[in-house]
Amino acid sequence: MLPRPVRALPADLAVVFVFVILTNIAVLAPVIRETPLRVPLGLAFVLFVPGYAFIAALFPEAGESPTDESEFERTEEDDSESSLLESVPLSRDRSGIDGIERVALAFGLSIAITPLLGLVLNFTPWGIRLVPIMIAVSGFTVIATAIAAVRRWELPEDERFQVPYREWYAAGRSEVLEPDTRGDAVLNVVLALSILLAVGSVGYAVMVPPEGEQFSAVYILGEDDDGELVADNYPTEFTQGESQEIILGVDNHEHRTVDYTVVLVEQQVSVEENQSAIEDNETVSVNETVVEEQRELDRFETQLAHNESWHHPHDLEPTMTGEDIRLVWLLYPDGEVPEEPSMESTEYTVHLWVDVNES
Image 1 (cartoon, rainbow, N blue to C red):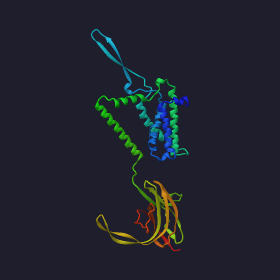
Image 2: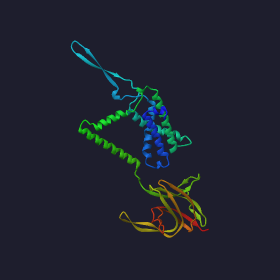
Image 3: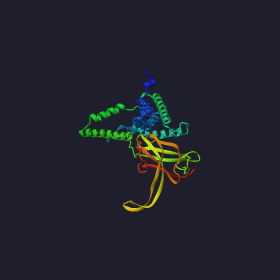
Image 4: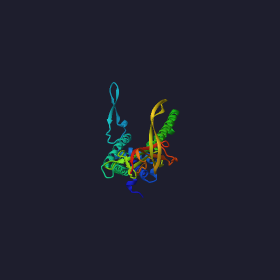
């Protein structure tokens, strides 16, 4: 049912085609892309497959191992006193490369090809994004694989490169199931267990990376002359009854989806100087800020996924008048807001000092 070129496709190149399809499904399919399957497939796809296809296109012919590069032709000369056996090395012409060289070059070229494709995409309207990168790398790999297949078909069958699967299987079966000594059998078992442990450890580390530090953040932003958001240009002079806009920012780095509540309060405060406090087992004098009066101005709610940010413009309209009115944004993860919100009830706060004149 399949066309002859497809049926005649070399096994290693067919694996490359299948790997390209599986990687695109794992990375782009709506449901599968949320699973850890995309990590190992993506790493192998970026770090090995494009380089292997490129090497296959450059060297379609079979190569020889460096250890088999020369042979020895023995000639016997008879002499009246003795006979001498001489060995004359005859070198072979190696136009191809062997399997070990292909694997090494595949890794190196893949590491070079993928950034170059990204550099080209950077100067296109699509930019460096997931879908353009996948299309570019997949397209390059498929074209290189097709060229490699055509070039192999043009060679005599005995000169084409073929992955020696059967030889590998026979050698491995002989080493594992038919060891020469009992010590070899024990070493084979230890080697197999070591490989499984190494692969399992690396796979777990890649698919389940450490979460790292968990925290949230709250901040306020203003706008510069170009309309860009900056941590500056805050409104600090108000007239009672008038409002000015400011932008509230919240970041989620909790490694989970979190419901946030932000409480905006205004405070009339006073500073008590030379208050005693204990720091590093020593009594020192500090200035203590005392909240004399507090009023709640507004509340904001949002839900953020991990590594997601929220910028919310809103109007500030203080009701207290005087100098050094403190506006405080109190961030409460998971929506757990106490009856009397304060700076002591949450570790995430940001404040702004303003002056409010009477109307």
